[in-house]
Amino acid sequence: MAAKNEGFRVCPKCGARNKGKWEFCVRCGEALHDVTMAPGEKATRVVALAPATEASPAGVILLSLVLLAAVAGGIWWVSGSKPPAQPDPGIFAIAQTPSRPSPSPTVVPAGQKEADGGRRALGQGDARGALKLLQQAVDSAPDNASFQSSYAQALFLAGDLPAAIQHFSTATQLEPQNVTYRMGLAAALNHAGRNDEAAQEYNRILTQEPANVDAEEDLGQLLLLRKGDAAAALPHLRKASELRPGEPIFDQQLAFALEKTQDLDGASAVYRKVLQKTPDAAEVRGRLAEILFNQGKADDAIALARAGIQRDPNVPVLHRDLGALLERAGRLPEASAAYREYARLAPNAQDARAMTERADLLAKQASGGPS
Image 1 (cartoon, rainbow, N blue to C red):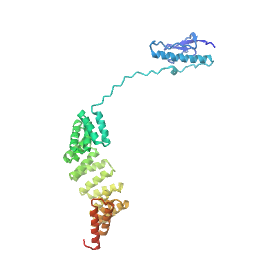
Image 2: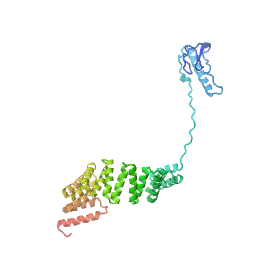
Image 3: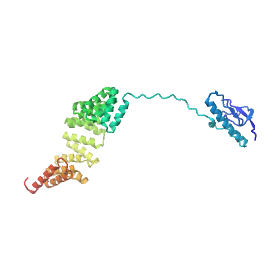
Image 4: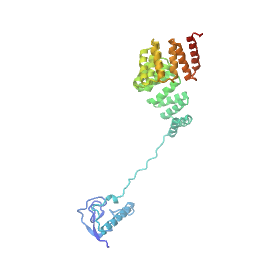
């Protein structure tokens, strides 16, 4: 069947030619209701959309797509089916991806690659590999405080405290307000036994961050255990306990400081608080029992120790503590049995043999034999 001729409409907005029956422009969607029909042409032939440069690839592609669509439209018309009044412009549209400038290459700071590798090695427990890489990072960028601190951490873990202190000091000089670097320096000084310098660093940290619980705890422990100044340690350990309410370790440290300052009632109250949360804390149970005994409450102390053994009879220290309480209370056969049980549960303990010998001695004394 010969193809019929059909008029066309030129879009007043974009200049595209559209088949006569289309009511909207195939290119831009402009309404064509009031556009005058141009002289007829074959339905299978649609001229290219708005003028394009001959050398334009987009123009060639658009022309090809429009010709294909026009052929399809001719087939619909010849077969007697009615083409859609508004063709989908998306069929013919070509998505033009806007050109983007090429990203400029990322500049890696000097030593960054070595620092990253050293930190990974440190996390994997490879101290030797970490030290080598982090030293290279520091050599490449000696003014980088982060590299200095990471290298100091590796030296600290490797046991080279003087070098660790040196590089932590450099990091804090480069960034004086960085609390993390200063905490590292304080810890290194603390472990090196440089107590006064460590205390100064912890106090500087607390000036910057009054609520720094780690600095409060470390300073309290330093004053209590290294300098033997329980009174000076007490406010720091109390503050740490307040900052971390409900955490047994902080309460336990506070109770020990109270005990050392002879505030036995205060210490007992905190120890009981810890036992309520962690009833299997053998050391806390032993400390509280000792306080009770010294306050003249021997039966309460012994009952507290026995309660711990009832909870878990396989904890050696509970039997040794019970034996000591029973011996001081004059209950020698029971004390001897408790010491023997301790030695049985902990045969490799340094005092296992001494406890066995003590048990034998108490048994002889209880039976009236020679001591």
